[in-house]
Picture 1: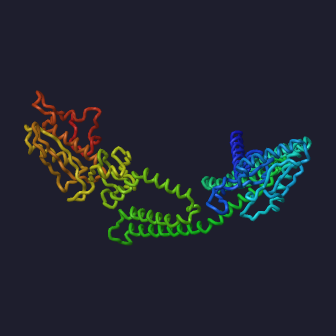
Picture 2: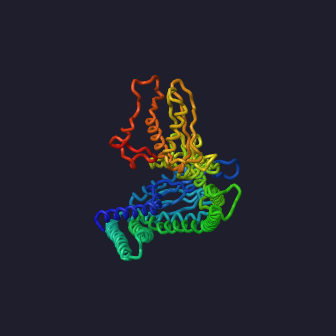
Picture 3: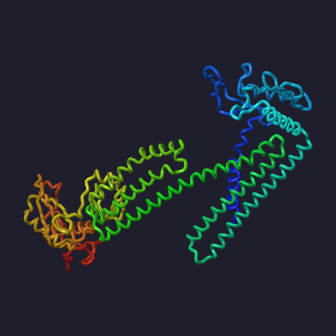
Length: 566
């Protein structure tokens, strides 16, 4: 493994560790600061007994040295619970700052339970401060609050002892070094395992490159998951050990394992609760897949001619199958939606509304294209291999899809036309003749009035006879389609032998028209014909094959006139 790959792997490992720390450490946000007043519960709407409902302020918890001491729930002589909590923390610090032994005493009086430290008043627990939901009494509060305060004072006193602090720092540094070495060893073992696995797979000659890549991806995903689990365990143990060394952070260490266990318990409970719904989703998906396979088999049978259904033939059966399959899966999605994990949550509902709004605003054009595709297919407007002209695009239809139609032009370019454009454009289909099996080809020429029209008819028919890409039956026809100011417009209509060679046949026919008109001395001067020129505008027969034109056999297909000899 080269240096860049190792650096990349190291960066990925470090990023994974940071993500794990971000997942495990949110509980530490509880420590907003020593003596900070934190809301204890959202029960700000409690009411006093008796008269009309009176909203009380939110409870607040007094904290000292990163430990919860007592929760105040009611005001005391106009002082709100949050202010009582702040004053309590300050009084505890002031009492300990006098250098006393930190003796905690609790005296029960008419107003409540009074708490002192070294004889100095720090706070009072009122009857309204007791936890009414748990039925807490003053005796219970005395035991709980007194124990918390005594533990916090002991931790605060031990944190200022230099020997104990130095010992904790040394152990924390050693634990950190050991943690880094363990993570480095795990990351190195992971890299070695990946390299070893790759080498083993390469030696397996019977495995193709795609199979080796697939196996390697699966094993690498499993290894990544195992690395995350091992890393999470190492991080949890390291944090718990380091936090337990210092009195201030010791509560974090005591709650860390419980937090991780609770998080894993929530995840496992969510997985267990989601299993029945996921099983139902799998059943619905399996049934929809089965129906789709049945529809595919039925469509293949109709396409092969084994079954016959009115209105369905080989051309439209596949689009009809896709439409029916899409409807089945939409119905399955509607049935499976209530069983999806989190489908009843507000976040999932809001996301569904957002996705629906995005689809309704952004996919309106796609819906129009899809509707156009089904109209073209079921209306049998276009078929595969039809030679058509859609707007300015002419060529053979390659396929009619759900959103677009693909046309292969004579220059071997595949043009994709949106179905909405096809529906709103004039489409000429040259592959749907009404009176014959072959399609028609038409070319026009304008000749002056000084040329006999019967001669023009005969020359156009002779040009058609020289073109071997045309059918002889039915015979070609010539029509005089316009009598303009300076010329007559003649139209030659013929039948193609192969509609896919339409451009080649038209080019050959036009070349033969020019040859025949030159042969008989009839000028093609229109549409800008005004008067006869001084010399006839013709190409002499002896110049028909001037260089670099090819000689006989290499000229345009269908040309039968030989070159001049001598």
